[in-house]
Structure formats: C-alpha cells, structure tokens
Length: 122
Length: 106
Image 1: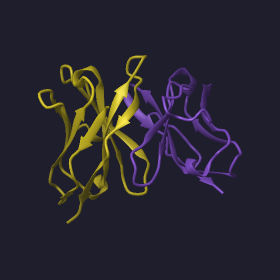
Image 2 (image 1 turned 30 degrees about the vertical axis):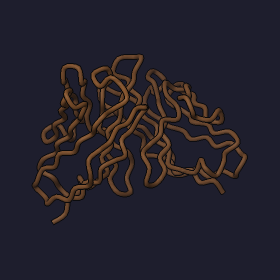
Image 3 (image 1 turned 135 degrees about the vertical axis):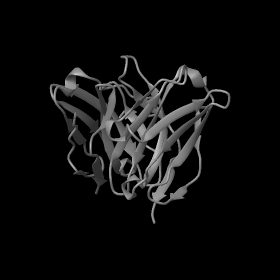
Image 4 (image 1 turned 180 degrees about the horizontal axis):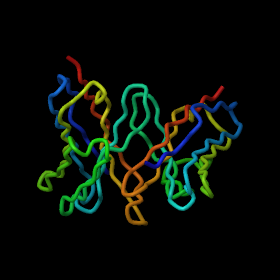
C-alpha cells in the first residue's frame, strides 16, 4: 500500500532554515510527481512546490520561489523541502502529496503524508 | 494570479443535500478536484477531474464543473461528512486552492 511518512515537528527561529522530509513506499517512486502543500493555523491549504522524481525538475509557487528548494533522493525514495529565511508566517503544517494527472500539469493529489508542523518563533 | 472562491460555511441537516460551490474565471475550461479535511487529519481526495470519485469514496459525493463554477454535492449528508472542503485547480503550472468551506451538519 502507498505510504508517505514525513519527518517530525520542527521549531525554528526567524531567519533560520528548515528541511522537511517525506519517505515514500508502496509504489515506484520515480513514476509519480510529488508536491508540497501547507496549511497555516486557521488558514486554508496552499500549494508550495512540485518535483518530477524522474529527473528532478521542479516548480514553485511564486511567493516562495526565492527561498524554497524541493529535492529528492531516488536511492531512498525520499523527498525534501527546504525553506529558508523563515518568518512567523511560515508557521504551518507541511504536507507532501502524490500527484496524478491525465491532462499535463493538471494534477490531483491521491495520497498525502501525515503532515509536519513547522513552528517559527523567537 | 488565479483565484478560486468558496463560501466560508455551509450548513445542512442530516439526510439532506449539501452543495458547495467554487468560482473562478473560466473554471469550466480546466479540471477541478475536491478535498475533505478534518481537524488533525490529512486531506482526502473526494472528487477529481470534475466528477470522478476515487475508490472508497461513497456514492453520495458527486461533482460538476461548467462555466465559472464547480460544485461539490453531498447527497444524504451524514454527520461524518462534517469537515472543511477545498476545491483545487491549476493555472500556469501553479496549484491553486479555494479558501475552503466549513460544512456543518446539524
């Protein structure tokens, strides 16, 4: 069965960086695009980033483009999201999600990780 | 940037039909998907490609998308359906979520 298992909660100070991981199992890792979606406290879902595990090409939401990096390690079927220059507004639960599509670049998310809480506080 | 607009809240009595709308410019020209999100849990896909139900999602969940509006319909709503619901679509290789609708079953 498909599983996406994320790393544990993080507490960071403003200006620091955080790296969250998501280990995939139960399917061929390189066959599906992967995404990160976040939810700040009391807010809605927000799409952050996408990666093609087969090749490593990425795409980012405009608001994060200058301080986010999504990578993958195919040898361990693990995704990473690194966010730098953290501010209090980055406090959120970060989810990894597997993306499917029939029309190119119109994904839907069929499996989600359990979420990782990142808290940014001085 | 592209925006999707949902009503903040919808209320429904048990057994009745709930409809949640999602509006965006020419939304009907792209695929919409819907996610159910309960507190403390991960989101769950309930509708994809406008009207398709994933395996395991009850038949009472249905969807449509035309013009500028996508609609999630829950027929015979049950207490377990109380949750936040988000529509989602793509624009210029960017994922966009609606603001979410809190469905209350009372």
